[in-house]
Length: 483
Ligand code: ADP
Image 1 (cartoon, protein in one colour):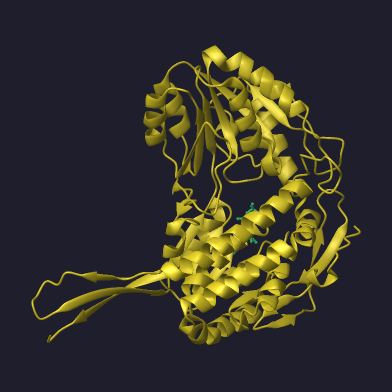
Image 2 (image 1 turned 180 degrees about the vertical axis):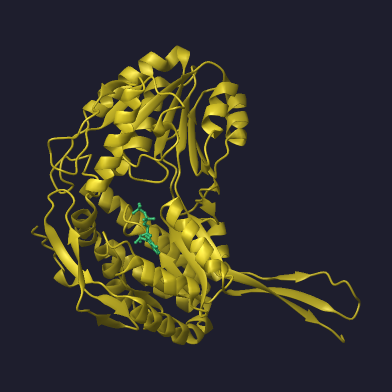
C-alpha cells in the first residue's frame, strides 16, 4: 500500500515511552483492510516495557499536575491546532489502517480535535466548593484533584477519537497516561503521540505502546501506580479488565458494546427516518458501538420504510476508503466479515427476508454489501448480539408498549433512537428507553459537548460534556477546626 503523506514523519513505527521512540525485536503487521496489504510494522512489546511506561507516567505526574490549569489548557489547545493543521495526513493514516472512507476519517480527526478543545476549556473550570459547616468553629472545603496515572485501552473503530476523548480530559485534569491502542490501528495513536511531543507536552505525560494485549493490560490493571483504567471495547474484555482492576481497587471507566434500538412510529417523517437510519446504521460500515442494530418499525409505516431503506442501502457506493466517492469501506478484518455472515445466515435460516445485500461484496475479501433484512424476530441471533457490520434487521410492531418492550429487551443500554412527531410520545419513549443516550428524530448524536456513555452492561462513566472530566478527578474534603 502506498501511503504518501505531506509530512512523512507522522508515520511512526515505534512506541512512545518517556518521550523516546522505542522499537522491539518482535513486530506486529498493520494491514490495509481494503487491500490486505502491509501498511507498517509496529513493535510487539510486553510487560517490562509497560512497567517502564507506568514508571515514566508516575515520574511525570508531580510536575504535570502542578502546572496551572491555564498552562495545561494551552498545551491541549496547541495539540488541537496541530490535529487540525495535519487533518489530511492524519485522515490518510487512519483510512490506511482502519478502512473507513476518507471523508469519515477527516470527520473523525476533527471530532477528536473537538475533545481537545472542549477539555482545554474545561481544564479551567475544575471548581471546588465551600460547605456550610456543621460546627461553629469549623470551615469545610472540597477540592478536586487529578486521579493520578491513567491506563487507557482503546479499540480500532475510531483510532483517533476514542483516544482523544480519554487523553484530553485526563491531561486537562492533571493526570498522566499510558495508552495501549488497538494493535489493528496503532498508527493514528503514534501520530497523536508525535503531535503531543511537538505541542510541548512534557515527556512521560503521554506514553503509547503496542504489543501483547493481555500482558500490557495485565500490568495496567494490576500495577499499584496506575490509579485508573479507562477502556473502550467489547463487553467481554471490559468485564475481564474490571475483574483484574478489582484487586487494587482502581477507578474504572468502561465504554462497552451496544445494541441500539431504532424505533420508527407511524407518525414519523418517513424520509427523515430513512436518512437517520442510513446515518445511524451504515456509518463506519456499521462498526460503531452506537450504530442502530435493531430497527423496530410500526405496522402502518413498515413497508414504506423497508422499501426506502433498502433502496438507499443498495445505492451506497462500496469501495476502498481512499477511492473517490466511497461511502462504505471494508470491515476491519476477516473475522468481522465471518461474524456478519453468520448473523445473516442465522436470520435467513429462521425466516428473515433479504431486502437488499445479504452477501459479501465484490470490492474485496473484507467487504460486505449494505444489507436490509425484514421479518426479523427476537429468536434470531441478530436480535440479541451486536453485529458490528452493515446489516439493518427490521422488526414489526403494533403498539408503543410493544416497541418499548422490544427496545429494552437487551443486556446493553448504550444508544437508542426513535422517530415520531408526537411530542408527548417523544418524552414518554425517551424517558422509558433503558439507554444512556437517545436520538430523537436524528441518527447522529455524538459530539464532544455532550455526555457519552451507557447503562446496563454497556458501561460505567461518561465521556465528553461537562461530566467527562469527573472520571479523572477525585474529591478531597478539607475540614478546618479551631477557628
Ligand atoms: P474487538 O473485539 O472489537 O476487537 P476488543 O475488546 O477485543 O474489541 O478490543 C478492544 C481493545 O482491547 C483493543 O485495544 C484490544 O487489544 C484490547 N484487548 C483485547 N484483549 C485484551 C486483554 N486480555 N487485556 C487487555 N486488553 C485487551
